[in-house]
Image (cartoon, rainbow over all chains, first blue to last red; front, side):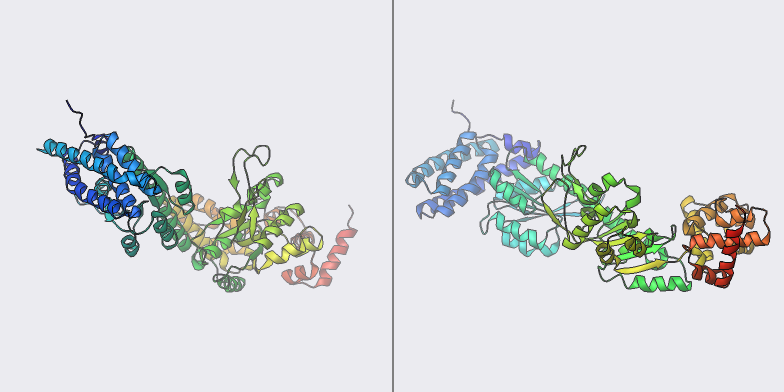
Length: 114
Length: 453
């Protein structure tokens, strides 16, 4: 069986057991994540590394609430690359991987919310 | 039950999800009115709404968190700022603390607890500040000149004239007067009626502090500066910064310390003992003494340069015996105060008792009158103070003289001798006070000398 991509520990620490609020946050992630991914993609495609860094930095805060450590680390490493403008040629591939992971995460969240 | 939103929080956070979370945590307390901002510029434009606390995300879309914090530190230096950052960067944190940031919290799992703790501490600090403000406000009313300094005798009118000249400036003031004339009350009244009223008033009695401790008491010390200095301590001058320091009994200060005090006054800065950090000072100095400092200066017991630095506006507080009917005004005031403090029924002073109060010469001045009145208030029956309720201290001059069986001539000797002592052997002054000729005094002195020992 495939491992889950959801980790709500951080969110639960905040929400202190308020299930409605946890649900609201998950829904918010579902609506925000595609927009944030688009911003990251645009930054990378236009080689505007500042935009790429800022949108990755902001996305990092979002995945922190919902995702497992592997995804968090992935976003963090991309953020570092964009900030330092280092290994930039790898960023498009890294983005594709991230988009794929987030899509799977979104699917999983949708199932959880039913 | 209705709750009032008495604590306004501005939270600056660009990440929508985190912003929602932050709003959720901050709104858990019914007292909080939370306003969320996505952009630094929007928050800066809304500062006229006077927030009690601002949280700032370090990474923002339109400007850096550092820029926002820098602007906040100049525009709203008294509003606490808590930085919430996605990065654990010690250098950044240290830098932000130099702008006066209250706390630096990273977006980690314990953020909720840390944030709520920080807010609680800020609230406690703010309520303490408000309490201090309130108490200062109360004090400034309590020390209004007319309420705190009682009297309408000629010598006191002169004092009031001088006092009104001290309120709008920071000139030093030197108060002289016999013991018990109310020098500290006057010093407090000057402070609380001045434009420094909201800053501290710090009183130091030079005579009450051992010489060896006085320097550290006044100027502070660093940890380990001397044996026993187990922690850093700020001195009274630093404590009074922005306000007023009252140095009572300045005439008792040793010459060596006088030189150090002079330096602090001249340079307007202080360095704690054992330290090297210079602390800039803006302190008004009020000094008081029962000694004649100009005489002390002539006798080389008080530095001339320091004397002139401290002199400023000299205010002489007359002894009670020279204040005509102020005795009755003061007696009534002190009695009312005592009644208030002890929640007693109204007490009045009979006419005969008033006369008895006027006839006495109060070597201990107002302090003595206060003791006499309080004792009378306790002793009196039916809430009326009678002459028999007024008891003078047996150590007082007049009582001591009157208690002896002597001839009229011997009484005269005794009175002249006591007056000469009181007025530092100033024959002209004694002659004027007793309304007799100087020759009469010299004659008595000669006769006293010729008396068999």
